[in-house]
Image (cartoon, rainbow, N blue to C red; front, side, top):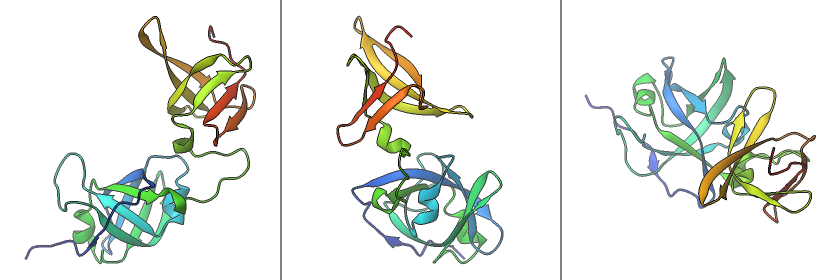
Length: 189
């Protein structure tokens, strides 16, 4: 007997952001493990509509984009576990292994004052207090005690990187509407 996914085809929302992937089945009742891309996976907990796309590598058990209606998602050890409608048992949960999870940005919880989602910081230009361009955020690193902005810039025709700790001591202002961060940092640091 073949096992098939009974999930509805869906269109990926225009504001969809990839937030994790399904690692494996968990238990026998259709739960599955999720590897979130963020140390604080609030988007996975707040959204009850996850959009899945097949794994980039490995077995493809479905094609296109499907909608997964989440019943419950919760922390478990160093990962997240979830249960969804139309995933009644372990066999169906195993078919989701490797699937990429997208959530509409509009369903993310509203951050507190002076809190930012990493996805909102990527692509922002960074300047110092004197207005000198330091680069554009292309990545963030979580180093344990702090997050570090990784900036891409060009010097003498060569692509380079600069790192700035994303802490109050060095970051003066984040202006999302202007897509700009002002930092107390010099180009020769």
